[in-house]
Image (cartoon, rainbow, N blue to C red):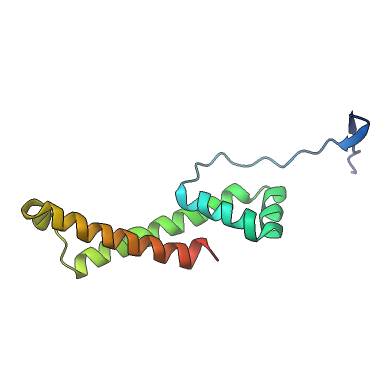
Length: 118
């Protein structure tokens, strides 16, 4: 069954009345938003293919989930290897903050390079 395309006239031009397919309501966090901006800027064909097929939010939610899991894993494993504990936090909070900032920055950089900007 073919669907007839209708048009709307605005300022002397006819525009097709197109609708995107329904997409699930999903909250996209910082990783998904960064990846979305990256796709929109550098991989436009992929971005618009996902958008018009109705799969963009689902895809971004998956990227968000993978990125957050990778980030958490890196942070937790690095804390364990470097012996950054709650005991250190209680004894020397500034040293703990310094180490945690280094770990978080390293983990963010890794996630950006391996998942977000590819």
